[in-house]
Length: 413
Image (tube, rainbow, N blue to C red; front, side, top):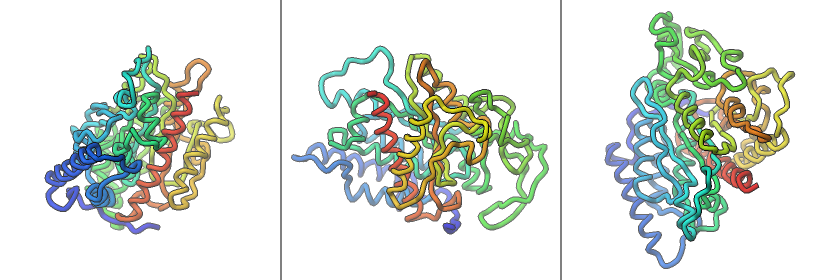
């Protein structure tokens, strides 16, 4: 197992205070971007400056707070370094007053830079939903997704990198929400590492649950309140599966309380509103990929049913092929043997995000696809800072690049 490491709450982005760190990273990125476009010849695809590499190494190899991650992403976008993306805007306001937000990759502005003004289609370009941080304690999933997103924002869309060309084409868009559950993530970082749900404890006891013996810091047991919030990955309702499996009561230390009804949490309601808005405009939602961190698995439909009795997915062979490709891409980084399997073979659960996407995006003769990535083989939610945490980012980037290529194929086919 990887060593357990306590995060350093409030640690700066780069040496110095946190606010100054964000500004320094943004300024270094702005200068690098300007220098690149003033140069006589193009840099190699994906090339970054030494300053950028140093800033990234300082930032992404240490666990960061939700506020630091949000500030760094905002600063990155403000530099103008990304010509194929735009802020996604706020999807939800959480119980503790944090915003759930993200980035849209593959916007039409990239296509405009490649040539004449493109003719906008009658309906928006197809969409892929990418999420992480649904479960509070899965820190590596959050850091890995932010690392990968940072790298994708730096892609030179004028290069021959096939991923850059998909993003620059405007043929498919990627809505990336890198931290769905910021309240729970912060509670896990600062109070109860093993905490799983969100912080809407009014639905999970509201102070009525008795305290329990619990690991209050890594490796140390103490007494914790018995109010566990809502497990957001049980709060969806694909195939009518809300509450039917893999759930627990509001005071249960298993922390699988699904809420009182589907989408009664701000975080899940925000994702639902995003997808339903796209579907109402006629958008084809190609797939979703939700990153967690206790693997290594690439899970594909379905998860709501017992593995002996699950129906066949209408695109079973294609779904299995996608899972194999994502697994192979992630494995190529460091040899981590990702297993591409149906979700129900890991354990059946109701109300998960992947099954909901598979359900609601099924239209006409096309079946929806919801994938879950269970990141890394560390056998812990808290891999050690440094090289192991960076590897989580590299494996995330690898499967995400492959997913972009797959989506490009789907959109053009």
